Image 1: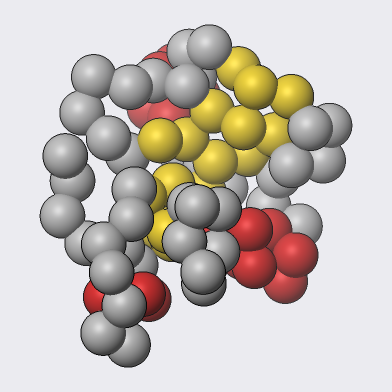
Image 2: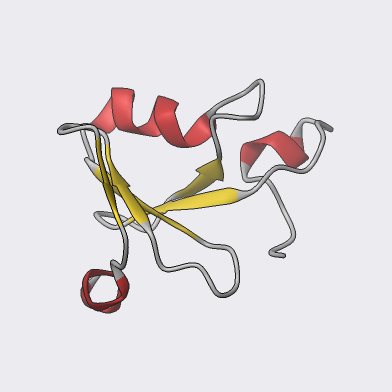
Length: 79
């Protein structure tokens, strides 16, 4: 698993899985965390698609359309 938790680790919170914006590369914690940094980034910037940063996971989530994408590897390489 990928170490960190974006801003959550900086404030001393528990580790949670990470999500990375495919628009700008900003990494934040998932919605299971109390801080939900990835979702807050979407709300602040309207960057619609994130992907899991976890090893062996290539899925993504589009906040704008509320759609789970099974493999965003090709998109992630472009960002």
